[in-house]
Length: 476
Figure 1 (cartoon, rainbow, N blue to C red):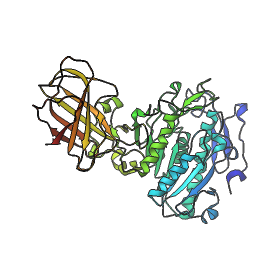
Figure 2: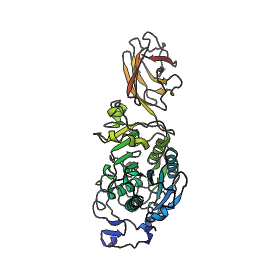
Figure 3: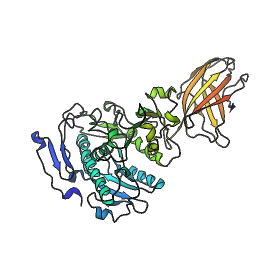
Figure 4: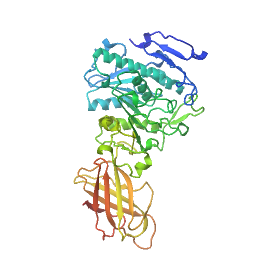
């Protein structure tokens, strides 16, 4: 039966400055520091009852979907198509959502398309669909406790290891995953935090928020890590064994026209703030779901910071293996456990498919080049396919093109040609001159992140290249 059959035992009343509440089967909860009355949580709350939070579970397998199951009814659970020999992946939503939201169904379908897996979607709309964000943040403790109880009951009933469980949580759902993780010993195999919620969590001790101690492997994807005062809803804190920061984890391409979700009454966090930018926060879901089915690796480069990444200072990865963001990051666990810096950076596109291939391009202009303001572009070719043409500077940024000068740019391509062995170079003039201007090129070097190696392309140094014309160069 569901925990609604349990009797709530109040050890003390919150409104009378009492600090604990016990829910049988789930444990005792408090609003004492660090759970409340702190800088990060100026207003403390006790979690609502299990009946009010209303945590629900829905099982999806390859042969049966959307079957409601209960965390204390193992006999009934055993009558479903749950397969004890397969991994079990829980998916947990965040604020102002429910267990049947479109992205959860899409992620479940993607998971089941690539592996025979048990997927359990977790809904907690009684706690999430409220205007009081601080209460919802507190209620994630109940959600985590309910999932932990379910995992323990499954493990005991079917005699399987905690290592076969994986919790994928978005926003407040990521924090709920952290609570289930801290309750179980031994640890679950994996937790994936998709833009973990920042308000009421950032800056708190690790007992309150997601961190690397919550599972054997914790991977985190940040897409909205701006400060709350600047309308960011995620956390800027490193929270896992590896934290991926696509586009610096803050402003996602294509989110210039932001979808706004109105959040009213966030007690004790920022009084009066009503609008949160949803596009950046939700992009984590699209990136993770795409990572499940794509052959594009979503490679992140361990680096001190995003600026260093953009300057090409972090192209080499430990052991010549750059970790993949999202679903496949577990394949790099043995590497990331050894990282001194768990942060990995990458860039993505503005629309699906989002994954891009990182290259570092070095263009050496020849001594016979004219001096001119302009832009340079490069296309990569293999024997049977090629990339789109990419500008080797930020959009609308002109370069001061001068003889015997080297230009370096971290460029992203939507695909990487098989057998990459040729480039086509093109330039545009951005200033008016009385005479026709020409460039010469000594060489072009391209670092392919996926291969972790340089490709050098030789040019005819005497060839004067006019603008708006593509010139081919082959590997030498």
